[in-house]
View (cartoon, rainbow, N blue to C red):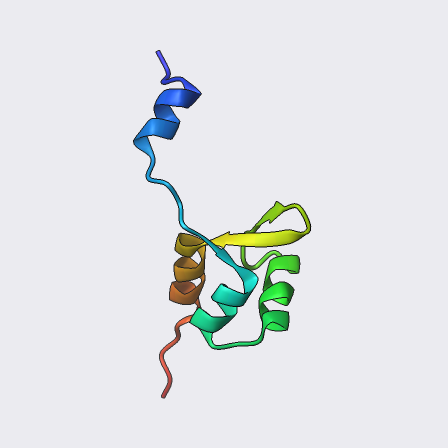
Length: 71
């Protein structure tokens, strides 16, 4: 039998949500760059009222995928 949604929710760690400004600070880019990433679908976000929130895990995953070897 599949676990209920409550059981699944209890087993998952609480995600840490960051504001667009906090994401911009972590990535050392402008807020507009973060908005472009969100609206372009490159960075998943949750809309809360009129603002967006991005999980810290999604920011780290985006940065991990963005690394490339130079030279």
